[in-house]
Amino acid sequence: MSQRDQDTITEAVLASFAQTPDARLRTIMSSLVQHLHAFAKDVQLTEAEWFHAIDFLTRCGHITDDKRQEFILLSDVLGLSMLTVALNNDKPEGCTESTVFGPFHVEGAPHYAAGEDLANGAKGTPCLVRGQVRGVGGEAIAGAVMDVWQSDAEGLYDVQRADLTQAQARGVVTTDNQGRFGFRSIVAVPYPIPHDGPVGEMLAATKRHPWRPAHLHFKIQAPGYETLITHVFNRQSDYLSSDAVFGVRPSLVCDWVEQADGSYLLEYDFVLNPLAA
Ligand code: BEZ
Ligand code: FE
View 1 (cartoon, rainbow, N blue to C red):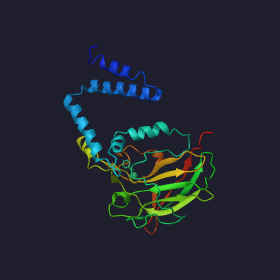
View 2: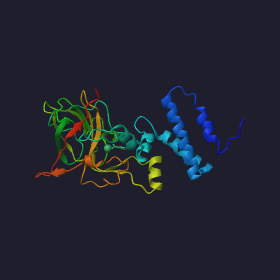
View 3: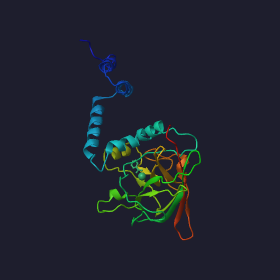
């Protein structure tokens, strides 16, 4: 039996994973241990700080349920979600860039025909959204299925309203035979991510705000193409330079143009990457 101290413990833990049959799991566990130990040494972690971190993670677990996922929120505010998106979505020049999925997507949202209003009663300034879905070779993509979701004028998604039974400001639209889409909705506004839990405490303790700039979410699927998960951000919005979850990419920032009747028009084209042969 050998003595374990700060100079030998890392090697001992690494050796304990040496027989891991799955090579990828071995790589991940070894790298995680190396970085965790280096971090603890770097900050000279105290026992009180270690306990505080365990308590923080425990409280993240306790507040998590089927509607609230504090660990994803933690990953989001630490930039890990966006880093993972960036690492895994390196696309050819001209493709629409991806960004974070977020926690407010709902499978099975109602389908809408071209021109219909997916606000479905949500409060907000009316807005027409239209554009085209193309492949990176310029070809129109007919029948692309687009999931759209957004917050209302009070910065809340329908799923955050306990009193709502129907979908609001979310829906599924399909492109026509020229790859075109168009739907009515409302103007998105900035909103704070949920900040009444441990992640919110961390933001407050580090003098960070919880706000996201105004955006529409899109998930676009078409046979033969990579699924695109992205947002379109409003160029006039606050927080474009300080998104709480680091999701803004300049290519996704667009103008919402005010019309004579006070409504808005958003025109944006999406370009999908073909699946590798
Ligand atoms: C969202 O845009 O819906 C979102 C993303 C990350 C955390 C919270 C909300
Ligand atoms: Fe959002």
